[in-house]
Each structure stands twice: as structure tokens, then as C-alpha cells.
Amino acid sequence: MAQMFNEISSVQPRDPELVRAAKPKRFKFINVPFVAILTLLVAFGLLVQLSATSADADYSFARQLSGVLIGLVLAIGISRLDYHVLSGYTTLFLILIVVLLISPHLPFIGVTNKGATSWIKIGPLPQLQPGEFAKVLVVLLCASVMARYGGRLDDLREYVKVVAILAVPFVCILTQPDFGTGLVYVVIAAFTLIMGGANWRFMVGTVFALLGLFALLVVTDPILDGIAGHDVGLKDYQMSRLMVWNDSTVDTSGDGYNVQQAMIAIGSGGLTGKGFMQATQSTLGFLPEAPTDFVFCVLAEEFGFVGAVILLVMYAVLIAVSVGIALRSNDLFGTLIVMGAVGIWVFQIFENIGMDIGLMPVTGIPLPFISYGTSFMIMNFCLIGLINSVWVHNGH
Image 1: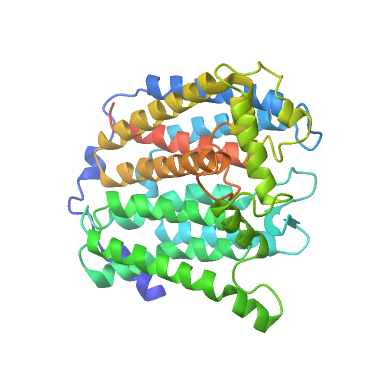
Image 2: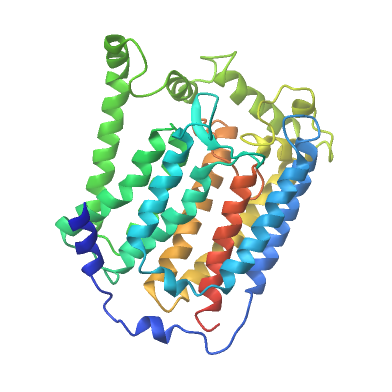
């Protein structure tokens, strides 16, 4: 493993002068369209959470607001940091990711909830989810690794080394287990490999290999569980979600019920919705995990089809502006950072809304800037800081 790191680190960008050339000639602290659309998104998210959390004592709007405020401070600080200085810390990023993802397994601080050991609680501090913070480090890890190849990775041996390094976060998160967050890590790696110039034949082969392994796991899982006498691969709830994805009537008291209620909530909103704070599916307790997994249903029920379209338009603008920043970056490292963040947002938007309308399996993946979660909100603001740093420190 040490040799692998040394060989990866020894690969140099094609033009070492790019970093110095990318220094800003004048300082502009914000990209106005980027900040404007984010302000609208965050405000819309807080409005939805004010309603979603009002009917559930397990959630606190004040905590959601605190996540926004803490995240805002971090975003400003990260924006001022020249992202170029982060390009040489590949090994450090990997170590920090491993430490974060194994921390929930440590005694006295690890917290298990709904079958997953994905949280930590230290003294009086609020409960946190290290897997969310690791997403930011995974973006930096992938960008720092791929930037060293200067936009072209055609050597199979080097490709295998890169994939092996980028697979470490996925393997670590599965120990919790948190397959949904693991999928986000895979998407970050995929976006970075594509934008970093990895050979497309290698990537297609990797996709088919992963699909084959997953199919094999699904087929052999009942056999392995029977032999071992307990869950070996996929957990029972994961198998249930896969079955419900195929047919929501399979489990009408569990995951199937959740999906059916989600679609009822969305449909009941009609064109313009029932009005703010008037969502009956969530307030009467029919809709499970309304502030988190199924928050889009609350939005659609209260603001209707019009509200859902407005949200999707805001997401589209956010992605477009972010991609524009990535394409204007003077170095590959900056481009890959932004595209890694875009990968997170695109996948989580698609998966969260998809599972709410029955097009995707239920994975518990939250909706960017809308779903409840202090760790999740802080992570998104850290991504904002990184993207704005790329904008600022490229002389715009």
C-alpha cells in the first residue's frame, strides 16, 4: 500500500506552472449567481423544514438552523483558503477518511440507530454523522489523485491503483453499514474519473464488474445467510428495499408502506399544493421520516407541482453555474473538486426524489439543502466553500 501511494504521488501534472498561473490577479470574494441560487435554495429548505419538523418532536428546527449558520461560517473560511495548497495531501485525505469512517465503531462515542452504526456523540455535543463529513474529503482525495495524471489515464496498471485507492472509503462505510452513503462515494469517484480523463474502456469494464458482483451477491445472499445463521452480505432491510422497488405492494406494513404513503402525499398536493403548514400526510403521522428521507413529499404536498418544479429549476441553475465554474478553472485539480461536488448533488437529487416517487429504491439518501440534518447541511456548505474557492483563486 505504501508503494502504491509513492507511485501515485510520483506522477506529475503535465504543466507544473499551472498552479502559479492560476493565482488570482484580483480578488472577488463571491460568484454572485452561485451565491444567489444557494440563498434561494437554503431559504426554501428552511421553509419546508419549519413545517416538517413542527409535527415531530424528534426533530428540531433550531438544530437545522444551527447547521446552516455553522456551515455558513465554514463556507466563508474555506472560500478564503487557496484550494491549490490542498493538492498534495492525497495520503492525509485517505487517512482522515478512514479515521472518520471507523470512529462510530469506537466505544463510548459510537451510536447505533436503526441497524446502522453511523453516528458519534462526544459529551454534550450534538450527535454527528462522520460519513457526511467524509464526503468532502472523498472529493479532495479523488481530485488530488486524478489531477496528477494531467487529464489522461490510459495505463491499466495505474488505473487499477487509482481505483484501489478510491475504493477504500466505500469499503470503510460498508462496515457501518451505510450503503447509501457508499453509493455517493462511488459517484464522486466516477465523476472524477470521467473528468480526469480515465480510459473509457477501463471504466466500462469496472461498471460491468461491479454489476456482476452485485448480482452475484443478491443471488447468493439467502444461501450464505442460511449457512451462517445470520446476515452475511445484504441486510434484511436492504433486501426488503430491493423487493419493494420492484413491487411496492410486497411489504405494505414496512418499506412498501413508506413508498405508497410518499406517493400519496405527492399526489395529494395537486397543482399548487395544500398550503404552507397544511400537509396532512406528515402532520397526521402517515408519512415516515418526513423531515429527512421523504422531505420532498412534504414540499410537494404543501406547494404542489408548481413548488416541485421551482425546486428542480433551482437545482438545475445550481448545477449549471457550478459546471461553469469547473470549466473556467485554470487547473485540473480545481475542475475535479467542483465536479466531485456536482456529482454528490446530482446523484442525491436524483436518488432522493426518485425513491419518493417509486423510481429508485429507498436508500435514505437526503435531498441537498432541503433534508433535515446538521452534519448533512454542514457538509453541503463545505462543498460551497470549496467551489467558491475555485472561483476566487482562479482570478475571476
